[in-house]
Length: 427
Image (cartoon, rainbow, N blue to C red; front, side, top):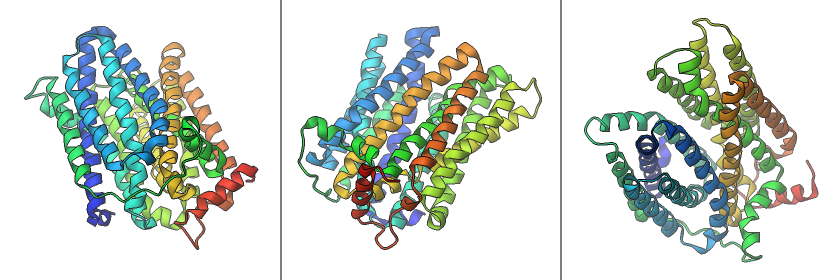
């Protein structure tokens, strides 16, 4: 898997991703502490609103950036995004009002909505070979999972020697280093996109591609299934560990670590698995696996007690993580095969926007329903969403479109062929 790091350009981009992710993790911890300093007991409401703003920025900004990406130099766009993110993080320690937090969070996440899809659309051009690109996707998934484990520990260690606001300066350093690494990389020129249609047509080009291509329509359903499970973990882990099971605050981190561990194990196994079975089998099985895990979680939730519930919860969280990784890790391969080179930037922007729209639905559902009607109701509702989305994904993804034809796995004709089929409504 590490052999792809021999490519200098990819090595610099991957290092930039890892460093920026670490900085983002520090900012997440620092933002929670800042919210408490400003709002006190209402910090949870502040963070919930900030999270909604984050998702809203992703949904709104990414398509607009995708429409303009072909007219902007990739390197300048990513470096500029990093500099904006760093400048925003530098301003956060000086805010004194909640509205200022919201404004800066929107600016920070708007820059992320510009950086991430551009980064994702660049990697297939840097690593054109299918085998190398698959390994790069697994490395990227591992980077996200390791960040979720490493950044809180790093923040805790730093807080023993610096103030809360000092974490924001670590974030600034991370984005500055990311910008320097991207600036030092020589990026391939993207395929020229046709200059047709007005701003609205260009902004919606990626979304229209997703709706036209059968396997990308299936990906939309899989995104919703993963968001249902991920929202349950992100929002309600602390409720399960502290309120339901009566365990310590440290066990909250352990439960979240189980989710990350499951995701990492799946990511490590995926390159060989994908070589043997292909995207369709792996991703659909990952989506369908979420439903039995929700069923097991329902038993944990409704049980009157028992020491078995704690290890069962850890196993459930690890299974959620593994299933999510089975769906999310090959996503880049699927988009690369389904979209011609000149449409990759809008396609990756659409995936970024539409997948976060699913989270925008499931986050409040997990939190509000769990608080108002109890965890059992939240498990039932989100489990039903995961089941319906998984079955819909199977229905939408035709067996004939398991992946690119063996004769030309990287041909842009693949995307055009499936898009043509999709517009005729064939399955």
